[in-house]
Length: 472
Image (cartoon, rainbow, N blue to C red; front, side, top):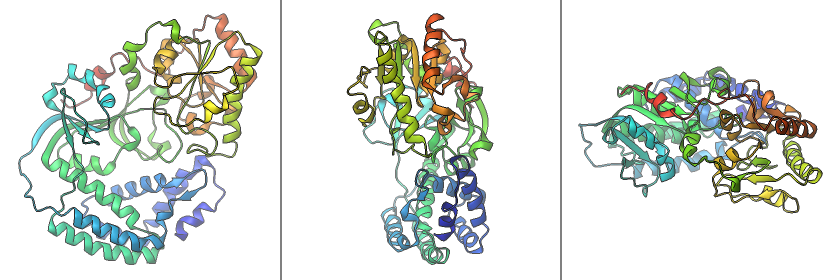
Protein backbone atom coordinates (compact mmCIF):
# COMPACT_ATOMS: atom_id res chain seq x y z
CA UNK A 1 0.00 0.00 0.00
CA UNK A 2 2.98 2.28 -0.62
CA UNK A 3 0.97 4.46 -2.96
CA UNK A 4 -1.23 5.52 -0.04
CA UNK A 5 1.33 5.32 2.75
CA UNK A 6 3.57 7.88 1.02
CA UNK A 7 0.58 10.19 0.83
CA UNK A 8 -0.11 9.82 4.55
CA UNK A 9 3.48 10.63 5.51
CA UNK A 10 3.03 14.15 4.21
CA UNK A 11 2.35 16.95 6.67
CA UNK A 12 -1.14 17.64 5.40
CA UNK A 13 -3.87 19.56 7.21
CA UNK A 14 -7.51 18.63 7.53
CA UNK A 15 -8.75 21.05 4.88
CA UNK A 16 -6.56 19.48 2.19
CA UNK A 17 -6.81 15.76 3.00
CA UNK A 18 -9.87 15.10 0.83
CA UNK A 19 -8.47 17.23 -1.98
CA UNK A 20 -5.15 15.38 -1.92
CA UNK A 21 -6.83 11.97 -1.75
CA UNK A 22 -8.97 12.95 -4.70
CA UNK A 23 -5.86 13.69 -6.73
CA UNK A 24 -4.21 10.53 -5.44
CA UNK A 25 -6.97 8.26 -6.73
CA UNK A 26 -6.98 10.08 -10.03
CA UNK A 27 -3.25 9.32 -10.30
CA UNK A 28 -3.86 5.70 -9.34
CA UNK A 29 -6.54 5.41 -12.03
CA UNK A 30 -3.93 6.25 -14.65
CA UNK A 31 -1.77 3.26 -13.75
CA UNK A 32 -2.12 0.61 -16.46
CA UNK A 33 -2.62 -2.24 -13.98
CA UNK A 34 -5.38 -0.35 -12.20
CA UNK A 35 -7.06 0.70 -15.45
CA UNK A 36 -6.98 -2.91 -16.57
CA UNK A 37 -8.63 -4.01 -13.33
CA UNK A 38 -11.33 -1.33 -13.72
CA UNK A 39 -12.03 -2.48 -17.28
CA UNK A 40 -12.31 -6.11 -16.19
CA UNK A 41 -14.69 -5.07 -13.42
CA UNK A 42 -16.81 -3.09 -15.87
CA UNK A 43 -17.37 -6.22 -17.98
CA UNK A 44 -19.56 -7.45 -15.09
CA UNK A 45 -20.47 -4.26 -13.27
CA UNK A 46 -22.04 -2.28 -16.10
CA UNK A 47 -21.23 1.13 -14.68
CA UNK A 48 -19.20 3.89 -16.37
CA UNK A 49 -15.56 4.15 -15.30
CA UNK A 50 -16.01 7.62 -13.81
CA UNK A 51 -18.78 6.32 -11.53
CA UNK A 52 -16.63 3.42 -10.32
CA UNK A 53 -13.77 5.82 -9.62
CA UNK A 54 -16.16 8.14 -7.74
CA UNK A 55 -17.40 5.20 -5.63
CA UNK A 56 -13.80 4.15 -4.88
CA UNK A 57 -12.88 7.69 -3.84
CA UNK A 58 -15.82 7.86 -1.43
CA UNK A 59 -15.05 4.48 0.11
CA UNK A 60 -11.34 5.14 0.47
CA UNK A 61 -12.11 8.35 2.29
CA UNK A 62 -14.61 6.52 4.53
CA UNK A 63 -11.85 4.05 5.40
CA UNK A 64 -9.46 6.84 6.43
CA UNK A 65 -9.17 7.86 10.09
CA UNK A 66 -8.48 11.57 9.89
CA UNK A 67 -6.99 11.88 13.37
CA UNK A 68 -4.26 9.29 12.85
CA UNK A 69 -4.15 9.63 9.08
CA UNK A 70 -4.37 5.87 8.72
CA UNK A 71 -6.36 3.87 6.22
CA UNK A 72 -8.25 0.78 7.29
CA UNK A 73 -5.61 -1.91 7.87
CA UNK A 74 -7.63 -4.33 5.71
CA UNK A 75 -6.54 -2.34 2.66
CA UNK A 76 -3.05 -3.79 3.08
CA UNK A 77 -1.98 -6.28 0.44
CA UNK A 78 -1.52 -9.09 2.99
CA UNK A 79 -5.30 -9.22 3.49
CA UNK A 80 -5.98 -9.88 -0.19
CA UNK A 81 -5.62 -13.68 0.12
CA UNK A 82 -8.11 -13.69 3.03
CA UNK A 83 -10.50 -11.48 1.09
CA UNK A 84 -10.12 -13.73 -1.95
CA UNK A 85 -11.84 -16.52 -0.02
CA UNK A 86 -14.35 -14.16 1.60
CA UNK A 87 -15.27 -12.77 -1.81
CA UNK A 88 -15.80 -16.19 -3.37
CA UNK A 89 -17.77 -17.48 -0.39
CA UNK A 90 -20.01 -14.44 -0.71
CA UNK A 91 -20.56 -15.19 -4.41
CA UNK A 92 -21.43 -18.85 -3.76
CA UNK A 93 -23.82 -17.86 -1.00
CA UNK A 94 -25.63 -15.48 -3.37
CA UNK A 95 -26.29 -17.99 -6.17
CA UNK A 96 -30.00 -18.05 -6.88
CA UNK A 97 -31.94 -20.76 -8.72
CA UNK A 98 -35.13 -18.69 -8.76
CA UNK A 99 -36.38 -17.37 -12.04
CA UNK A 100 -36.68 -13.61 -11.83
CA UNK A 101 -40.02 -11.98 -12.59
CA UNK A 102 -40.19 -9.93 -15.77
CA UNK A 103 -43.04 -7.66 -14.61
CA UNK A 104 -42.43 -4.68 -12.34
CA UNK A 105 -44.49 -2.92 -9.70
CA UNK A 106 -44.73 0.84 -10.12
CA UNK A 107 -44.46 3.50 -7.43
CA UNK A 108 -44.15 7.28 -7.36
CA UNK A 109 -41.73 7.35 -4.43
CA UNK A 110 -39.20 5.14 -2.69
CA UNK A 111 -38.32 6.17 0.87
CA UNK A 112 -34.91 4.57 1.22
CA UNK A 113 -32.78 3.27 4.09
CA UNK A 114 -35.26 3.33 6.98
CA UNK A 115 -34.12 1.65 10.20
CA UNK A 116 -36.82 2.53 12.75
CA UNK A 117 -40.50 3.44 13.07
CA UNK A 118 -39.46 6.86 14.37
CA UNK A 119 -37.50 7.56 11.18
CA UNK A 120 -40.42 6.47 9.06
CA UNK A 121 -42.88 8.56 11.06
CA UNK A 122 -40.87 11.64 10.11
CA UNK A 123 -42.23 11.19 6.58
CA UNK A 124 -45.90 10.93 7.55
CA UNK A 125 -46.80 14.37 6.21
CA UNK A 126 -45.90 13.11 2.74
CA UNK A 127 -49.18 11.18 2.87
CA UNK A 128 -50.98 14.52 2.54
CA UNK A 129 -49.54 14.86 -0.96
CA UNK A 130 -48.91 11.32 -2.22
CA UNK A 131 -51.37 8.41 -1.82
CA UNK A 132 -49.86 5.71 0.45
CA UNK A 133 -50.30 3.03 -2.22
CA UNK A 134 -47.93 5.03 -4.45
CA UNK A 135 -45.13 4.93 -1.84
CA UNK A 136 -42.77 2.06 -1.05
CA UNK A 137 -40.27 1.95 1.82
CA UNK A 138 -36.98 0.04 1.81
CA UNK A 139 -36.20 -0.97 5.37
CA UNK A 140 -32.80 -2.04 6.67
CA UNK A 141 -34.39 -4.17 9.41
CA UNK A 142 -36.81 -7.08 9.00
CA UNK A 143 -38.88 -6.13 12.04
CA UNK A 144 -40.10 -2.77 10.71
CA UNK A 145 -43.88 -2.67 10.30
CA UNK A 146 -46.21 0.25 9.64
CA UNK A 147 -49.80 0.10 8.46
CA UNK A 148 -49.45 3.36 6.50
CA UNK A 149 -46.77 2.10 4.13
CA UNK A 150 -45.78 -0.81 1.93
CA UNK A 151 -42.42 -1.91 3.39
CA UNK A 152 -39.83 -4.17 1.79
CA UNK A 153 -36.66 -5.53 3.33
CA UNK A 154 -34.15 -6.12 0.56
CA UNK A 155 -30.69 -7.42 1.21
CA UNK A 156 -30.66 -10.22 -1.35
CA UNK A 157 -28.25 -10.21 -4.27
CA UNK A 158 -29.55 -13.27 -6.18
CA UNK A 159 -26.66 -13.86 -8.57
CA UNK A 160 -27.10 -15.95 -11.69
CA UNK A 161 -24.67 -18.77 -12.51
CA UNK A 162 -23.14 -16.68 -15.28
CA UNK A 163 -22.62 -13.70 -12.95
CA UNK A 164 -21.04 -15.99 -10.35
CA UNK A 165 -18.69 -17.48 -12.92
CA UNK A 166 -17.59 -14.05 -14.16
CA UNK A 167 -17.08 -12.74 -10.62
CA UNK A 168 -15.02 -15.78 -9.64
CA UNK A 169 -12.92 -15.28 -12.75
CA UNK A 170 -12.46 -11.62 -11.79
CA UNK A 171 -11.37 -12.66 -8.28
CA UNK A 172 -8.24 -14.38 -9.59
CA UNK A 173 -7.26 -11.32 -11.59
CA UNK A 174 -7.99 -9.13 -8.57
CA UNK A 175 -5.76 -11.25 -6.37
CA UNK A 176 -2.87 -10.93 -8.81
CA UNK A 177 -3.29 -7.18 -9.25
CA UNK A 178 -3.60 -6.69 -5.50
CA UNK A 179 -0.06 -8.00 -5.12
CA UNK A 180 1.20 -6.06 -8.12
CA UNK A 181 -0.32 -2.76 -6.92
CA UNK A 182 0.42 -3.47 -3.24
CA UNK A 183 -3.17 -2.85 -2.13
CA UNK A 184 -6.05 -5.18 -1.25
CA UNK A 185 -8.38 -4.47 -4.17
CA UNK A 186 -10.94 -6.91 -2.77
CA UNK A 187 -11.67 -4.38 -0.02
CA UNK A 188 -13.07 -2.11 -2.76
CA UNK A 189 -14.40 -4.78 -5.11
CA UNK A 190 -16.59 -6.41 -2.48
CA UNK A 191 -18.26 -3.07 -1.73
CA UNK A 192 -18.78 -2.36 -5.43
CA UNK A 193 -20.30 -5.78 -6.07
CA UNK A 194 -22.63 -5.62 -3.07
CA UNK A 195 -23.87 -2.13 -3.96
CA UNK A 196 -24.33 -2.95 -7.63
CA UNK A 197 -26.23 -6.22 -7.31
CA UNK A 198 -28.35 -5.07 -4.37
CA UNK A 199 -29.84 -2.22 -6.39
CA UNK A 200 -29.71 -3.99 -9.74
CA UNK A 201 -32.04 -6.66 -8.36
CA UNK A 202 -34.11 -4.07 -6.52
CA UNK A 203 -34.85 -2.03 -9.65
CA UNK A 204 -35.51 -5.18 -11.69
CA UNK A 205 -38.57 -5.78 -9.49
CA UNK A 206 -39.64 -2.23 -8.70
CA UNK A 207 -40.00 0.82 -10.91
CA UNK A 208 -39.97 4.07 -8.96
CA UNK A 209 -40.07 7.64 -10.22
CA UNK A 210 -38.41 9.28 -7.21
CA UNK A 211 -36.14 8.28 -4.34
CA UNK A 212 -35.77 10.22 -1.10
CA UNK A 213 -33.40 9.57 1.81
CA UNK A 214 -32.62 11.71 4.85
CA UNK A 215 -29.17 10.28 5.65
CA UNK A 216 -27.42 12.44 3.05
CA UNK A 217 -24.02 10.97 3.98
CA UNK A 218 -25.16 7.50 2.78
CA UNK A 219 -25.73 8.63 -0.80
CA UNK A 220 -24.66 6.13 -3.46
CA UNK A 221 -23.77 7.04 -7.02
CA UNK A 222 -24.03 3.36 -8.06
CA UNK A 223 -27.60 3.18 -6.74
CA UNK A 224 -28.47 6.41 -8.53
CA UNK A 225 -26.93 5.30 -11.81
CA UNK A 226 -29.00 2.09 -11.82
CA UNK A 227 -32.08 4.07 -10.79
CA UNK A 228 -31.69 6.42 -13.77
CA UNK A 229 -31.03 3.50 -16.12
CA UNK A 230 -34.43 2.16 -15.03
CA UNK A 231 -36.15 5.42 -16.02
CA UNK A 232 -36.00 6.95 -12.54
CA UNK A 233 -36.42 10.73 -12.49
CA UNK A 234 -35.20 12.25 -9.21
CA UNK A 235 -32.92 10.70 -6.61
CA UNK A 236 -33.18 13.09 -3.66
CA UNK A 237 -31.36 13.64 -0.39
CA UNK A 238 -32.55 15.53 2.66
CA UNK A 239 -29.69 17.25 4.48
CA UNK A 240 -29.86 15.79 7.98
CA UNK A 241 -27.20 17.89 9.69
CA UNK A 242 -24.60 20.57 9.05
CA UNK A 243 -21.91 19.18 6.82
CA UNK A 244 -18.63 18.09 8.41
CA UNK A 245 -15.12 17.98 7.05
CA UNK A 246 -14.58 14.37 7.99
CA UNK A 247 -14.55 11.02 6.24
CA UNK A 248 -18.34 11.03 5.72
CA UNK A 249 -18.54 14.65 4.56
CA UNK A 250 -17.62 14.24 0.90
CA UNK A 251 -18.65 12.60 -2.40
CA UNK A 252 -22.42 13.05 -2.27
CA UNK A 253 -24.50 12.07 -5.29
CA UNK A 254 -28.10 13.15 -5.98
CA UNK A 255 -30.30 14.88 -8.53
CA UNK A 256 -31.71 17.10 -5.78
CA UNK A 257 -30.58 17.81 -2.23
CA UNK A 258 -33.06 19.51 0.09
CA UNK A 259 -31.09 21.60 2.58
CA UNK A 260 -31.63 23.94 5.50
CA UNK A 261 -30.92 27.22 3.74
CA UNK A 262 -28.68 28.98 1.24
CA UNK A 263 -26.16 29.75 3.99
CA UNK A 264 -25.69 26.10 5.00
CA UNK A 265 -25.98 24.24 1.70
CA UNK A 266 -23.52 21.56 0.63
CA UNK A 267 -21.36 22.69 -2.28
CA UNK A 268 -20.12 20.37 -5.03
CA UNK A 269 -16.71 21.97 -5.38
CA UNK A 270 -15.94 21.91 -1.67
CA UNK A 271 -17.09 18.31 -1.13
CA UNK A 272 -16.20 16.77 -4.55
CA UNK A 273 -19.86 15.87 -4.94
CA UNK A 274 -22.23 15.22 -7.82
CA UNK A 275 -25.30 17.17 -6.71
CA UNK A 276 -27.85 18.63 -9.11
CA UNK A 277 -30.32 21.12 -7.67
CA UNK A 278 -29.71 22.44 -4.14
CA UNK A 279 -33.09 23.52 -2.76
CA UNK A 280 -33.66 25.11 0.66
CA UNK A 281 -36.67 23.69 2.54
CA UNK A 282 -35.82 23.90 6.27
CA UNK A 283 -35.16 21.13 8.77
CA UNK A 284 -36.51 17.59 8.38
CA UNK A 285 -36.28 16.70 12.09
CA UNK A 286 -37.48 20.09 13.30
CA UNK A 287 -40.57 19.63 11.12
CA UNK A 288 -41.24 16.32 12.91
CA UNK A 289 -40.93 18.01 16.32
CA UNK A 290 -42.93 21.19 15.65
CA UNK A 291 -45.97 19.87 17.53
CA UNK A 292 -43.80 19.22 20.61
CA UNK A 293 -42.41 22.75 20.66
CA UNK A 294 -44.72 24.37 23.19
CA UNK A 295 -44.16 26.81 26.04
CA UNK A 296 -43.23 24.76 29.09
CA UNK A 297 -41.42 26.23 32.11
CA UNK A 298 -40.35 22.76 33.22
CA UNK A 299 -38.00 22.70 30.22
CA UNK A 300 -36.65 26.22 30.64
CA UNK A 301 -33.00 27.15 31.31
CA UNK A 302 -31.09 30.39 31.17
CA UNK A 303 -28.39 28.58 29.21
CA UNK A 304 -28.86 25.27 27.42
CA UNK A 305 -25.90 23.33 26.00
CA UNK A 306 -26.72 20.78 23.28
CA UNK A 307 -24.31 17.85 23.13
CA UNK A 308 -23.38 15.40 20.38
CA UNK A 309 -22.15 11.86 19.95
CA UNK A 310 -18.48 10.91 20.23
CA UNK A 311 -17.23 14.51 20.34
CA UNK A 312 -14.81 14.15 23.27
CA UNK A 313 -11.02 14.14 23.04
CA UNK A 314 -9.73 11.06 21.23
CA UNK A 315 -13.09 10.39 19.57
CA UNK A 316 -14.06 10.08 15.93
CA UNK A 317 -14.10 13.84 15.39
CA UNK A 318 -10.79 14.57 17.13
CA UNK A 319 -9.00 15.53 13.92
CA UNK A 320 -6.79 18.57 14.52
CA UNK A 321 -3.95 19.09 17.06
CA UNK A 322 -5.82 21.52 19.32
CA UNK A 323 -9.16 19.67 19.17
CA UNK A 324 -9.07 18.04 22.62
CA UNK A 325 -7.88 21.25 24.26
CA UNK A 326 -10.54 23.33 22.49
CA UNK A 327 -13.36 20.91 23.30
CA UNK A 328 -12.51 20.87 27.00
CA UNK A 329 -12.05 24.64 27.04
CA UNK A 330 -15.58 25.38 25.83
CA UNK A 331 -17.02 22.95 28.38
CA UNK A 332 -15.05 24.76 31.07
CA UNK A 333 -16.70 28.01 30.00
CA UNK A 334 -19.99 26.59 31.30
CA UNK A 335 -18.44 25.71 34.67
CA UNK A 336 -16.74 29.11 34.94
CA UNK A 337 -19.99 30.89 34.14
CA UNK A 338 -21.99 28.82 36.65
CA UNK A 339 -19.49 29.62 39.41
CA UNK A 340 -19.32 33.30 38.56
CA UNK A 341 -23.11 33.70 38.21
CA UNK A 342 -24.72 31.00 40.38
CA UNK A 343 -28.23 32.44 40.02
CA UNK A 344 -28.46 31.42 36.36
CA UNK A 345 -29.50 27.86 35.47
CA UNK A 346 -27.41 25.89 32.97
CA UNK A 347 -28.56 22.60 31.46
CA UNK A 348 -26.70 20.03 29.35
CA UNK A 349 -28.80 17.94 26.95
CA UNK A 350 -27.43 14.96 24.98
CA UNK A 351 -28.89 13.21 21.95
CA UNK A 352 -31.32 10.43 22.84
CA UNK A 353 -29.01 7.82 21.26
CA UNK A 354 -25.88 8.94 23.10
CA UNK A 355 -24.01 6.18 24.97
CA UNK A 356 -20.92 8.11 26.08
CA UNK A 357 -20.54 9.41 29.64
CA UNK A 358 -17.59 11.73 28.98
CA UNK A 359 -19.50 14.99 29.47
CA UNK A 360 -21.55 13.60 32.37
CA UNK A 361 -18.36 12.70 34.20
CA UNK A 362 -16.80 16.03 33.28
CA UNK A 363 -19.66 17.99 34.89
CA UNK A 364 -20.16 15.61 37.83
CA UNK A 365 -18.84 18.06 40.46
CA UNK A 366 -20.24 21.22 38.88
CA UNK A 367 -23.50 23.15 39.01
CA UNK A 368 -24.36 22.12 35.45
CA UNK A 369 -27.65 20.20 35.34
CA UNK A 370 -27.28 17.05 33.26
CA UNK A 371 -30.67 16.31 31.66
CA UNK A 372 -32.43 13.07 30.81
CA UNK A 373 -31.31 12.48 27.24
CA UNK A 374 -34.57 10.72 26.34
CA UNK A 375 -36.57 13.94 26.77
CA UNK A 376 -37.30 16.16 23.77
CA UNK A 377 -34.30 18.37 22.92
CA UNK A 378 -36.36 20.69 20.72
CA UNK A 379 -38.72 21.53 23.59
CA UNK A 380 -35.77 22.32 25.86
CA UNK A 381 -34.23 24.52 23.18
CA UNK A 382 -37.47 26.35 22.41
CA UNK A 383 -38.08 27.16 26.07
CA UNK A 384 -34.51 28.09 27.04
CA UNK A 385 -33.07 31.56 26.66
CA UNK A 386 -29.51 31.14 25.41
CA UNK A 387 -28.56 28.02 23.40
CA UNK A 388 -24.97 26.92 22.80
CA UNK A 389 -23.17 23.88 21.44
CA UNK A 390 -19.88 22.63 20.03
CA UNK A 391 -21.47 21.26 16.86
CA UNK A 392 -25.23 20.58 17.16
CA UNK A 393 -27.30 21.25 14.04
CA UNK A 394 -29.98 22.57 16.39
CA UNK A 395 -28.01 25.81 16.67
CA UNK A 396 -28.98 26.70 13.11
CA UNK A 397 -32.42 25.05 13.36
CA UNK A 398 -33.53 27.13 16.34
CA UNK A 399 -32.53 30.44 14.74
CA UNK A 400 -35.80 30.33 12.79
CA UNK A 401 -37.55 31.09 16.10
CA UNK A 402 -35.24 34.11 16.65
CA UNK A 403 -33.55 32.23 19.48
CA UNK A 404 -30.11 33.32 20.69
CA UNK A 405 -28.00 30.43 19.39
CA UNK A 406 -24.23 30.14 19.21
CA UNK A 407 -21.50 27.62 18.55
CA UNK A 408 -18.79 27.65 21.24
CA UNK A 409 -15.72 27.85 19.05
CA UNK A 410 -12.40 28.65 20.81
CA UNK A 411 -10.18 30.66 18.51
CA UNK A 412 -12.55 29.96 15.60
CA UNK A 413 -10.65 26.69 15.05
CA UNK A 414 -13.62 24.30 14.85
CA UNK A 415 -13.56 24.32 11.05
CA UNK A 416 -14.51 20.71 10.47
CA UNK A 417 -18.07 21.36 11.68
CA UNK A 418 -18.56 25.02 10.87
CA UNK A 419 -16.62 26.00 7.77
CA UNK A 420 -19.49 24.92 5.51
CA UNK A 421 -21.74 27.53 7.15
CA UNK A 422 -21.55 30.91 5.44
CA UNK A 423 -20.20 33.55 7.86
CA UNK A 424 -20.07 31.00 10.71
CA UNK A 425 -18.17 33.48 12.88
CA UNK A 426 -21.34 35.54 13.29
CA UNK A 427 -22.93 32.64 15.20
CA UNK A 428 -19.73 31.54 16.99
CA UNK A 429 -18.25 32.60 20.34
CA UNK A 430 -14.47 32.38 20.34
CA UNK A 431 -13.68 33.07 24.02
CA UNK A 432 -15.20 32.97 27.49
CA UNK A 433 -15.29 36.77 27.55
CA UNK A 434 -17.21 36.75 24.26
CA UNK A 435 -19.57 34.09 25.67
CA UNK A 436 -20.18 36.08 28.86
CA UNK A 437 -20.68 39.37 27.02
CA UNK A 438 -23.07 37.86 24.45
CA UNK A 439 -25.23 36.30 27.16
CA UNK A 440 -25.81 39.60 28.95
CA UNK A 441 -26.41 41.49 25.69
CA UNK A 442 -29.02 38.87 24.80
CA UNK A 443 -30.55 39.12 28.28
CA UNK A 444 -30.82 42.88 27.93
CA UNK A 445 -32.57 42.42 24.58
CA UNK A 446 -34.92 39.83 26.10
CA UNK A 447 -33.13 36.96 24.36
CA UNK A 448 -34.24 37.68 20.81
CA UNK A 449 -32.00 37.68 17.77
CA UNK A 450 -32.82 38.71 14.21
CA UNK A 451 -31.53 35.71 12.26
CA UNK A 452 -34.96 34.35 11.38
CA UNK A 453 -34.74 32.03 8.35
CA UNK A 454 -31.17 33.12 7.57
CA UNK A 455 -29.59 29.80 8.60
CA UNK A 456 -32.70 27.61 8.42
CA UNK A 457 -35.76 28.12 6.25
CA UNK A 458 -39.24 27.91 7.74
CA UNK A 459 -39.75 24.16 8.26
CA UNK A 460 -43.53 24.25 8.61
CA UNK A 461 -44.25 23.50 4.92
CA UNK A 462 -41.16 21.35 4.32
CA UNK A 463 -42.92 18.46 2.55
CA UNK A 464 -45.07 20.74 0.45
CA UNK A 465 -41.88 22.35 -0.86
CA UNK A 466 -40.24 18.94 -1.44
CA UNK A 467 -43.18 17.44 -3.37
CA UNK A 468 -43.19 20.42 -5.76
CA UNK A 469 -39.83 19.25 -7.05
CA UNK A 470 -40.65 15.54 -7.38
CA UNK A 471 -41.84 13.90 -10.57
CA UNK A 472 -45.28 12.71 -9.41
